[in-house]
Length: 439
Image (cartoon, rainbow, N blue to C red; front, top):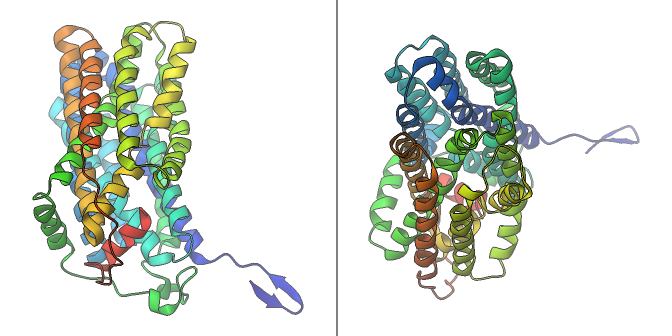
């Protein structure tokens, strides 16, 4: 707030504009990730490609999205946030836009899989952690929660729009529409997104000039690799990574790309199925916030036991819920799955902090990479099962059984006694930012 004469004038801190444009960039990138699930059937109809072939492109996308995330922070430290985000948006726009000219399946894998996977992976959790760490001291938890939920939910809430465009004008119009959405964000990123507060002559929101530290220009990639090597010697890491691998299989990998074609197999209109997944995206915000509240009060292992166990039971029931008409039982499944979609994140983060201390942000980066590898396996495996058996039923049953295994693995993680206050600084400013962003 500033004074003009005797009248106070409200002035919005630039950090909030940076957060807003970051949110738009994440939502724009999420639009690309919403496309494949809607367009599986149109691509099959036009090119004659199998579900397995199309799913391979989705699998490559998800794998690269996860494997890029641990190293994206290194790019932001070396080249700056704005350059990385502008480049990433351009890469995903090119990857999506060029699909209208493709004629063979390898082009689909190169465009949707490689280009879009690398581009969106460069704007994953690392962008949230870096922006909140550099621009905010106060309200870090709030801002990181909004940005994380925006990116996750955006993948689902775009589905009805993409499905409607496809139904009226075809899949090429839907693909170009998402390209246009990302390109529209580029001028805002160039105008409002800055690397650090000092670039605008301000201090971080709620902080002082001392909180605006110089980024580490080297060593971030080496730190990520070293974190993986050290964590891999720990049993809790493998249990957490294994559980998150299954989490990715049962959400982003299986339900997100294959729910719509599975529902269509049973006579449900694509637009209706896309609308149901959008509802999942809306409820996942409430579920994640509530899960964070519970994590502060309940043993995280017990929460993961409940989340994975109930998710497994719901997947066992899913094949009986499909039908041409929308029934109350399917709505109940959608609401539950929305609440449970990323509810596993807060307790998993809590256990990472408990077992790995200052290394938790780096370790969680690799746990998240395992989540996306699981997504890739399920994206490809779901399509393969559909082609071989003529139905997705086996995929739902296998995912349900693996969720039960994840529940057992999670509850078997030992608890550590409370850690004494740690005075050693984090490995790098990026790690500190990630700790705050996911704390």
